[in-house]
Amino acid sequence: MVLTRLETKLDTATIGIADHESRIRTVEQSAVTERDIAQLRSDVESLKRSRWPLPTIGAIGGVVGAVAAIYAMAHP
Image 1 (cartoon, rainbow, N blue to C red):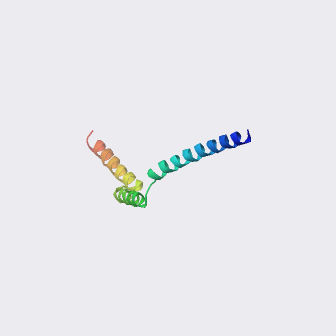
Image 2: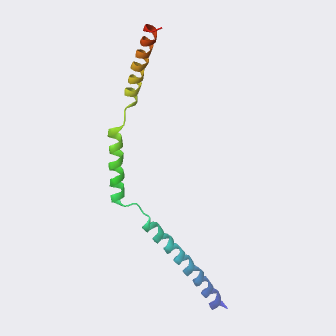
C-alpha cells in the first residue's frame, strides 16, 4: 500500500518534470539571440537617422501656412 502511493507520487513528479522540460525546450528554441538584438538595434538606429524632428515639421508647416496666407491676400 505504501509502495503504491510512493510509486504514484513518483509517476506524477516524473510527468511534471517532463512537461517542464518540454516547456523549457520550447522557450529555448524561440529565444532571442544576440544577433537578433544587434540587428534590431541597427534597424532602430537607421530609423532614428531618417526621421524628421517634430520642430522641423512644425517650422515647415508654419512657412507653408504663411505663404498660403500671403498668396490668398495678394490674389483675392
